[in-house]
Image 1 (cartoon, rainbow, N blue to C red):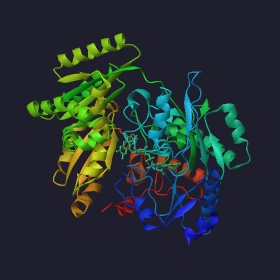
Image 2: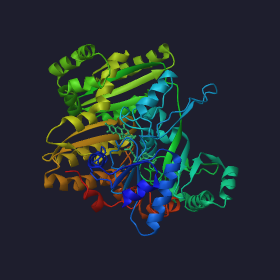
Image 3: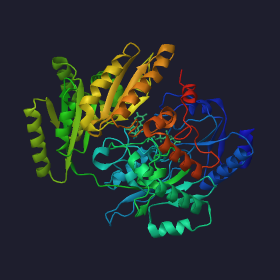
Image 4: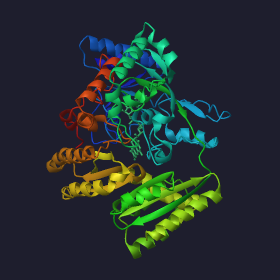
Length: 549
Ligand SMILES: Cc1cc2nc3c(=O)[nH]c(=O)nc-3n(C[C@H](O)[C@H](O)[C@H](O)COP(=O)(O)OP(=O)(O)OC[C@H]3O[C@@H](n4cnc5c(N)ncnc54)[C@H](O)[C@@H]3O)c2cc1C
């Protein structure tokens, strides 16, 4: 019935065949959920028709909703649905021209179905960078980067996606497309005067934020990165009213993003990479604090499990590095020898320093090397692109290797993105280890992360056929999140809430703030057509009823 109605509507290609539904029933999360129908709209007009049709169906009591999907690599289940899946990768893949280069404010507009790897090629031709790319940059697309408020290895120095979103085109629940960008107080007043859905939205949201300003401000997570909840605290500073901050990271729960104008930066021309080997993590917090004083562009890490995995699946890793296998293979020989003679380090830390001039950069490099010698921390410095690339490949590809290479056990991302303030790591990490140790019979795990931001990706490997392991997931998630909240952290720095974490939002933010989130959702989406169970209405029973087998 639904598929027939959508075919009659003629709002894009409609798919109900089993292979297609099967393909769209997973992302990179723990969950599996088959959509009833997949639609690939060809234009903004198709999207408008879809929205109007689904609003009508909801009004007549049919339980139908719309979930946007870009590349489907979400680790929280944000892009899964049992209703209508809207695929943006088939037709929303136009990249605009780079603009603002002469003025020193370069930006580029891209549609949500543009794969980041294609955007990056265009940016490289201009010597520009979108600095908030995630480790999944070869797989993911613009719609997901914006809607998850993604971050990555450059976030420490440059910040997350929300900082680079200059303007969004969005189809809202009234079936119209709007341009959303930062407004001055005078522009806000003009918007509020409109006798339309848009005017109502600005009026009510402005009121809501003004009325609860202090509560909203105190809910702002006290960590350097966060993708949990709606970022109400970034919308209005009494000078600028910036709705892009709310839509970015909202996982398609407030509307469909149809175009994003993204700010760009010129990468620094020179870089050096320190590879630091730690036997244990006792001094990680104090060492991190010291390293941060050298203003690294990236401060990343991966653990011994990740290292061993990279060695074990060496050919596959090389395959991701797009270069001559033989030469790359040779480059790993020193690392293999190091492992053979000194053992695998508990943690490998990557510190990237960048600069505009080599003299200034090498001076900083020298000072950092002195500090590491003083602290007796083993390390070496990679100075060429080739020497650096292999370590970045291990860091970026670790989760992908786990997903595709490990047999009998599956990656179970449910505590995959926790964040605490770096200065609390020395107290936090031992307590986290003790919790994880209690589950060691049921899982192995790898830890990689953005330690400069206190952001850790813990990826358990579990047998999801085993009822005891399945039951342990909820228990362990409860314990880890309770610990993270005790330290004033966030349960997600970049991977967002989705099916996994939306049910924990109340524990993180409290009922008052979650009630404000609900009011925001109701303002934008009064009929509840956009991506249900995410952000608002999260329900652990519902999510875990769809745990992958
Ligand atoms: C190997 C691997 C490594 C990863 N590393 C990182 C990392 O370093 N940092 C990070 O942030 N994430 C990471 N992720 C998670 C994920 O890849 C990113 O969050 C990515 O940006 C999601 O992009 P996507 O195109 O796959 O989005 P999807 O999975 O398709 O969607 C993500 C969310 O955005 C919504 N959405 C998509 N398109 C639209 C639209 N047009 N309008 C409204 N909403 C929309 C979806 O409904 C969903 O809620 C990783 C994933 C993998 C598999």
